[in-house]
Image (cartoon, rainbow, N blue to C red; front, top):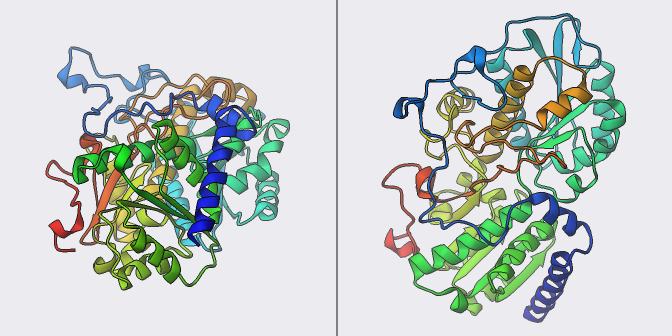
Length: 476
């Protein structure tokens, strides 16, 4: 088995070298990312880039009537009350703005998708109107490419020209993105981290979430920094073990690539099919390897079995730092504190970040809590933040045909701190990807049933938030 892992590691590393040299779809990903990967700011010194509050400066607060897509302020914004006749090709019909939301509302990730849809609905309800017109939200179950195309055509027949994608973005958006330019419709890909999707040259498509290239790069940085800070192990001496379900292979590649940029190679890599049931051999290998850090790339399907097996076999590595996915979802807590305590995870963003840094987060958490009885985590927060920000930008621009609206949306400049996710919004003029997405990713730890965010410090859940590494500090 270890021999197989070594072969996988070598193969994966060679593939990454090809990507870095500009071969295949990875080249497009590197080009549109527009972020110098491998130069992530320190988790321990990075400071807020949020613009200071007007009260702390000599600047006057932005007035709602003077607000544009260049000086947007979350709390000063007010929806437009100027209503005009429906503009042909703008996405309005019978005096309403028709929005379509598609996601995998059935299948293995349905529970998260439904939360994302609910978050989109909350954003619509909170917005109330766009261009002075009521918003009608259409929803559809896009569990695979065929159903995505079917739902797309159904909604389009009902007058929808503005689409929001959710958790199932990657395959949903891939199945319809080739049609949006010809159909003169607008697609907001709000949660997808896919790389290839935005190398297709689609003009009428925007993305809120950064790709897994950036996520993996920041996870690599976090692994090395946290290990040196808490374990006292220098990067060159650190023994990293990776286990990933094969559906997350590309994401894992992004992480290994991030390590390579920092002249680091993992000591162990093991991939497995999502339907794997017995993890005893894998955990036995991890125990025998005596690794300093274990980085799992798990899904909702097999993740519980792997984590339970670790606990059952008494495996407690000094640091478990997961790639979000299963480990930053509320269902993770269903395993119980004995299983979850001490596990760390990197997330794009979560509802557990500092409320004072992210405009609108406190209000969204209250709405989400009222419906679900708990705080939102990563995906729901991204859905709400993206939907809210895009709607407000469209409203500030004004009603016009979709092709003209697309050109104006490419000029948007929303500063960090002006969204519930903290991120700002700066579309790449060539690809539509949000260049401020995932700036920064955050790291937290499960502590007694709650995900406590710790890094970067300015986004920590509280001033006294800390990581307990190794776990024996808390007796876990």
